[in-house]
Image (tube, rainbow, N blue to C red; front, side, top):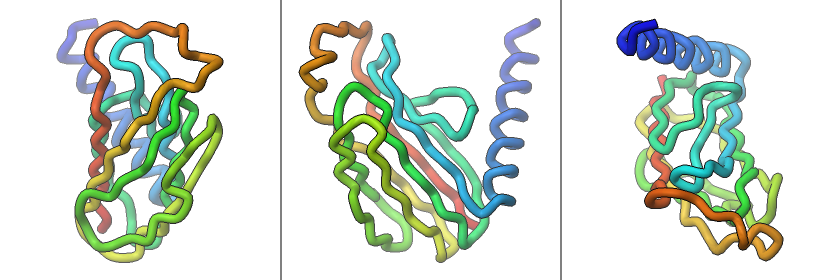
Length: 138
């Protein structure tokens, strides 16, 4: 399969996942550990990415789950103001959620902490990714 066809397939899969998530009224973003770049976002069963873009319908509940080997504090960088509760996801499987009521463009990142002691010996390659999530709410 050519790189162009592979990229088109990945794009179409991402769009389908975003559409399915918005139709259901909820979507789940998981932060997980990667050997290269340390951590990534993942929408549902989609491709893990450091920079993720998605479109959802107004009223969608967006859930964040931290399955990384380090804590992550969820930070809203821009967009209609949200009240983030439990944004300091300080243990594995910690989660928080927000309801995206207002239309607009929301931007999120995380502030990662230090690896949990049990995982401190895990080594990664390359620079750690800085996570960026852009959510367009229609």
